[in-house]
Image (cartoon, rainbow, N blue to C red; front, side, top):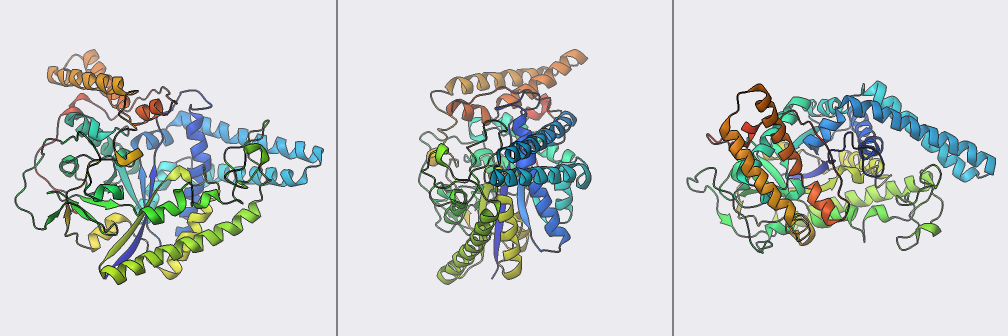
Length: 502
């Protein structure tokens, strides 16, 4: 019997390069680097150097890694980091003058932390965060997932555009990370029947889904089915309409592509607004900032307490709660696997999925919590495995008729497709038709060919799921992306031999 724990992080940012600064410009990327990606990489490299056995799965979207590898963002991040250090230093002097020793000690804590991160960025990682992720992949500690080129919402796109999103996304992953991706994080975990066949033609073997999509209950009123990319030749395993075991990977329909569901209860222990650890009273409050420096000096106190009544933050007190929460979480993982073993007596893969920016950026103590969890699991099990490694070691026999949907509100498409965004999908459909005409024309004149490549990039950018999401939530922004891997030919569906195997 094989039991394992899969920790999966989804790392994504909209393309904000050159889009100005606060509140939703390029500073969005700088904050994520300083708050999440630098401390996360520092932790994972520390664990590797200490000989702690671990594996985890990290999705890095093409739009994110294009930005992390960009020279201009690199230079402007150093400026941003220096500014944060300056703000902390200024606060130290201000609080010393005011006699506020408590807040002054937190300012010194920030100044030291930011200097440590800056030094790691320049010296340890040589200003190459993408290379730092690739290094972890080469040693087998991290499985890298690819994603759609611009995080396009695949079930609502035409088939040619889905092919382009996947082809450009995988090509970007190979070019920047030097890995051949086998797994994919589907944008917004959005799935429609037939998508598994398209994934298979691109050599992808597994993806992640919301547990609700295993249940067989129809979630989308008018479903979308992609044209079949392959013909089935009889099933080696039975096709079931619904499943109640989220600790088992399933082959999707007639394909060789596997769907892995996140465990809602165990994942919810972290991200749930009601019971999640980040709501702990001792943890740093994200939403209240100092009105002069913008740094954060308060703790959550209580989720119902107004921002003006928040109490002072204490890093030491927060660290104590991190240790307790890590022990509690690992205990829950072990209890869940034990209950599954007693009830079903079969192999089990307990999978939890989170947005990477939850850790460090939103939940300040989250990186330390991850470290404690990985050390606890390394000491007493269960083993942590990358999903691809687990699938190589264990056969997948059951097939499921996966339900269409997403991990959005109501598990359907309504967060991205609604009355407020209908005009976007009308325009995207028109643009896709025009791209088809442009591809068919096969322009040979250098200027026309260059314009065609730019049109392909613009269409991919317009298809990002971030834009309808921001329209729905009232936070829409613009962005500009050169995306060098896009060409009109990418919008030609890829047919031929199926080589992917789970």
